Length: 160
Image 1 (cartoon, helix red, strand yellow):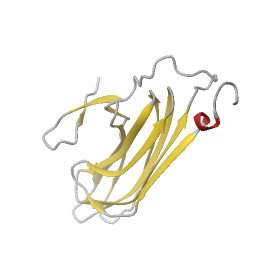
Image 2 (cartoon, rainbow, N blue to C red):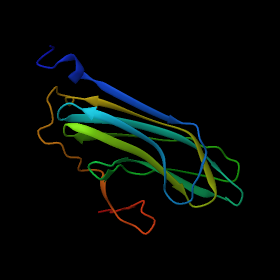
Image 3 (tube, rainbow, N blue to C red):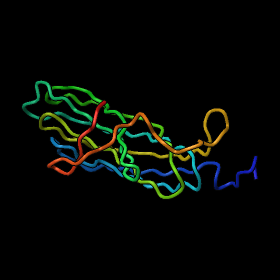
Image 4 (cartoon, rainbow, N blue to C red):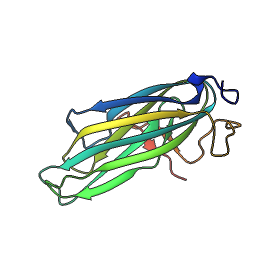
């Protein structure tokens, strides 16, 4: 044990990668990762994808965001714009407070026009304490926005 933590409670990591192509105008799940939190703590999620705007984009606006599906929370959008054939990099990082149990995180993307997303990856790392060395008193993520239903089932952001 190290300061009251068993070895399997200090850090855990999970990764998912999808080289597949997704043509997306509406929000599409690009990659999904699951991680088991042994106790209250934080999960640091990093995700990236390569959107390639297609014909007719002059320009198109591409966005992606990380979602905690268990807590129904969405991190802020990452956005880029580009014209037909302009390859871009779209990446996001967010720290989510979590309670014990399995957590599922998705990287979801979309565009205002014909865009192909490829080479998507998502990584999650469990951290049992904050920057001061203390565990979070209550697992809550105040900054991400709650997701509400939408006609396409992908969710819309409720912005303050």
